[in-house]
Amino acid sequence: MLSSLISLLFLINLGVHGHTYTIEEPDLLAEIEQKAKTVDSSQFGERLRQSYYVNIYLPDAKRVIRRNREMKYTVPEDLIIDNNMVAKKGQVINVLERVRLTTRYLFIKEYQFPLFLKLWEKDRSIAAVIIQGDLLSLSEKYPGHRIYMGSRTLIDRFEISRVPSLVYQDRASMVIEEIPYITKP
Image (cartoon, rainbow, N blue to C red):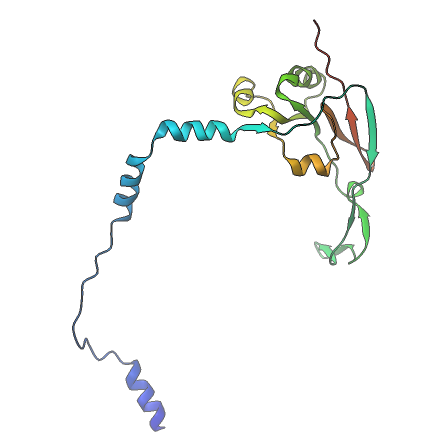
């Protein structure tokens, strides 16, 4: 009982004892505005432009080659969606049997973009994946098109070895089709 009373006394605010000191904190908005004034906007613009440039080297396709591959995946733990067991831990599934890829992806270099435009006229569900070139200039020039930046991860995942390469789903397999890009002299 006595210990409870002592604990209660420590919880009661008994006022201020001893010296108090004022603490000045800088105005956060003023700090941000000051930092913004010191930034060189031309340098920022150039860095932004450089971030849209991609440079992943892949050789050009010389002939039509078509490969099929399955997207096998080992489930690391029970996969339950909306209280329905979709797959058990350790089960190997083909992802393409359960998920539909509705977009076709054309992996290209910037100079091969006319091939994308030609294919886009026939199929509006196609998207360009630029692996070498200036993505910002293409996006500005063709604002109504789906143009994405390629990455080494995507290239490895789809096993792209040459460009242009068209990637799409055919039933339960992924098709990677190398298409030679021939410019007319």
